[in-house]
Image (cartoon, rainbow, N blue to C red; front, side, top):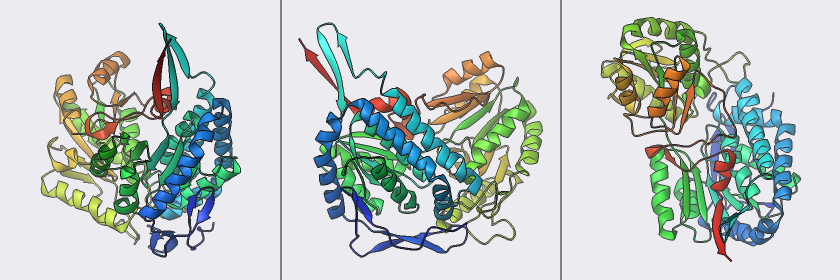
Length: 473
């Protein structure tokens, strides 16, 4: 299994590779610290060039029949599937996702998303009659997309697929930490027949390229996935040109285990939802809310289940948890674990420091029990494999604790189905799974409160990229 070549890569603007200005950003393998590649450090001039290409391509793409746009998206999905192994190896090298996960979720989700959006175009209500008004849904224009490193392909495809079906063009800034799949995606879009300028990639930092995209007067919409802190900044900058902003931000999901739940199932699914991708998932459930009378029983189940999560090198197919994305992030997660101990939470599994025998950016999967719901580890987004088990007294208390953070992205509820549904309705979160229900590519995904605004997936996600016009006649 070969790592991506250690060679500089260029921006993708107007359907071709454009060299950077000379400065580069290193891309390192978090498992080894080795240099994997170098990405160009883009400038505002590169953003101007990409926006001009997207603006020039917009009239033609917007005028293309939606069925043809959907067919192009379907071909992009097929192209990604054809390069699945290359993509998997690349993601494992640049951000440490275990290779088995890279081959399944990291490529499987984006391919599913392209299929679902391509299928939507035929039945979508592009026009409708309301009284004497013709309601027309039209592409919004040029979209600026900015994405994080934890699911580097999934995050951009979740924006690109609906934008293309809608008739928009795009300027994309990938995370400088994990930028390499953007190069593959750009090549796939060209092979799928996407006209030059419809999709453009500018590499660089948020402080330079992200700011330039957010402020650009010829960009009509920003779609951002990342931290709440960065989302606030993007909103402030974008407000100067009154562009639409869709934000999918941080989370601190609660897994509410009711007293009539299947405890083994609830704990197993709950651990998976906090340990997957080494906890680097905005939709994770890092808070497990449990009946106080069954707290110790559930802690025993959680500790036993956690022992099955093997931490190891991400290229080993037996590995369930690889490294976190960087040494800097490892220190941040470790700091939270130490903070939890200092604040009096009961450490029952894992703890600070690297797992024995591993020298990269590795974190020990960790469980705290009897956690104060107002403590830092229960309130702040750690973005690592750290579970906090919090006891509650009754349903009202559980709901109050679940809703007590500034976030509201995802949550889970386990219990007798009608009981669980009643509790789910009371949670202030954009997505609530009952008894481990499967992911639905057509259901809306997004947050309440400081987890963001706007929705992804299904017709809800498509509508984010459209303007609505009313024609009276």
